[in-house]
Image (cartoon, rainbow, N blue to C red; front, top):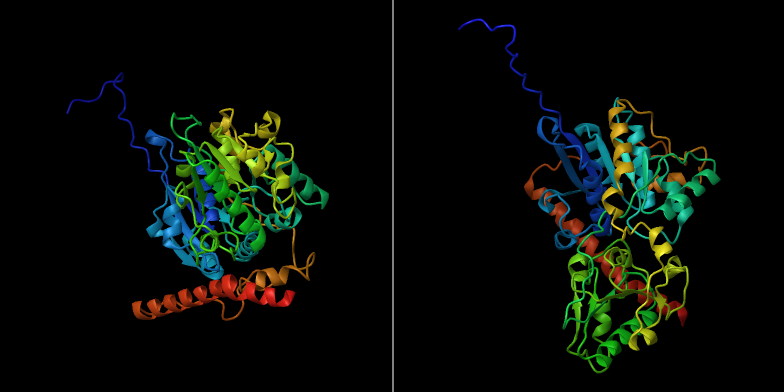
Length: 461
């Protein structure tokens, strides 16, 4: 082989493959799974890059065992989140912490109720890892209750996502008001907004009512809303009226549903008109055919506004904090069934919408830029300082131990004696344990939906 002359280029070296970015998503309900999985995708969408800069992303899906652990049907109904539902596994809090210790995650997304987030923050801190993961958390939708409680339980995460400029301002005010570090608060948006902008179709006239599991709570109020929806269908026989349900009887979502609309429909006098239907499925697919979205306070209203679908927030039961529709004061969307029956269509206030993170102006594509850059900087920082939640055994000795105890953790975040489940010693015993767990969960749900309401009615006698 002749020697290479000075003007000949050296052969390019093959770049070493970048290690995979390892991400864990821990969720405790179907809606939080959707939020967590899609948030993980939004935060790591640029990690892969292209060409020689490509970095693979590996996401592990974990479901925290509890009353609202989603069923396979619910997982499938959530829609495309980039994680194979068949690879999602159920864990206890202690099992999750063992997984974090053993698998070396770079990023952990905690899609949990506030108490669960607080427990995992203390649990991860107690692991004393030489290189801990970046921890991200946030809210799955509209924050209309327990603002201070929920936020302080989430304090300590590296990133606390706010779904809008309005929420980011409120979150910082709470943290600063108690003397806590507010730098973790990061404005983003709901990760599941999307779909084609609304376009009316000739001959199509569809009204969708987005039901909520716990709003309103009473049988009388839920029956009233159902009756008005059915009456609306009878008043407009050429209109398709859909009752969009979150779960089937016996399943749980983020909130407990004691009085499923499916059962209430069976007791309506006169039955249901032919243009009225109960529907399940992915909300985005239902909105694809909606000409009007009606709800009391569901986050579906924000999805609808993002797509510029006419949206109505009901005032029939009042504008009250317990209903959550007070969040929409100033939105221009508040109205009643009487007005909707007469053909009224609310017009959203542009300034209010702009502050709510629905990004109907087309800015949604950049909504996660700040959060993504923040996570990338934390990942590149190497060893991070220890997690430092606002609540500690010294600052909240009457509150924190109970929160951690519900997840079988001691006040210092370490597992309580006997909390660590042994490895399954075989398929048979594993199947038996799974059967027992499912039976226990079914009994709990029966108690919530059947026994508890009876006891409350007896107490009112």
